Length: 265
Image 1 (tube, one colour):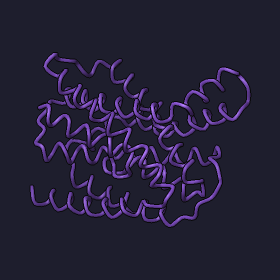
Image 2 (cartoon, rainbow, N blue to C red):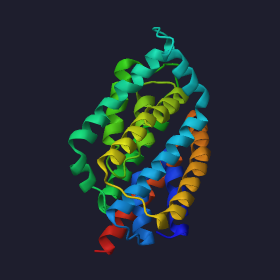
Image 3 (cartoon, rainbow, N blue to C red):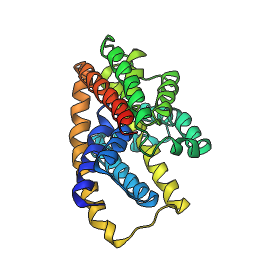
């Protein structure tokens, strides 16, 4: 992979991990447009590094909240931080179940399947349109809400369904405060990302070649910086009910991906 390609894909990953436009879908589109011919091991390694970069940017943005949760947990009391952690764990169950038992089926859906990506982007657009019209409240995330949001996160494992778009839209449609919805959406994925990275490394599916260090480093930095910007911006956009702009974008890109897949056959 060339350095410029790595930087472009890193920026795409950093922005789309937080903006509700599907990071997996855009990475597939980006690879198709750039003509990425990486072997599976190299492509998987790049994906792991990009996800680590965006997870790290999430921890930086929410460092205060994360530290409060960690301190609260080590007090071994039934406090707000402990309850929030349990809700995060509850939200992870559907995605963990799918990842453990349907890993091969999910992986088969990737690999420049642009038609599927296009249709799933249209689904994301619909979710965003609906969420943008929901009224704002002061409601926090309950245990049943956490599990339902987790189901949305599991469905978002399909390429083209935006994880942040699906989880934030579901939260808002459940009547949860929009700022709380955005923060919960971003924090709930961090343990999953680190768990997925650890599983991939332990499975021994990837190897690192010295020639990959520079492109990987460039992509990592690009994804991390773009992630810092996108995470902060997204919280503001959700609060101001500006999701319809991304709905229009997903509608256009989704339709374009479908057309491109038919024309390139």
